[in-house]
Length: 92
Image (cartoon, rainbow, N blue to C red; front, side, top):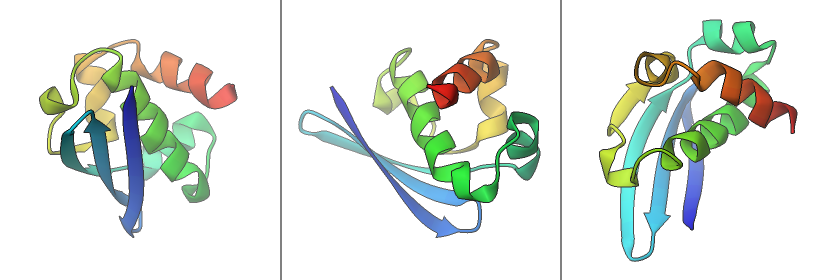
């Protein structure tokens, strides 16, 4: 089981630490305002979007395979089902 820690760094930019056993990885993530608009969410929802995105990614690859820095709009290029899955996760 992975532990995900999300820390706001500046508006719509977050630091994420993922701990899997004794290994911890660090990531810097940007949440594009257009993604929040598409999901019908506000900036206040951004940390939850980041957390759910990492949950999605960790179900598909180890933390060591997740890019150290990326924008959430890049995820759909690698995982076409990302936005549908994210919408479902956020509705739960």
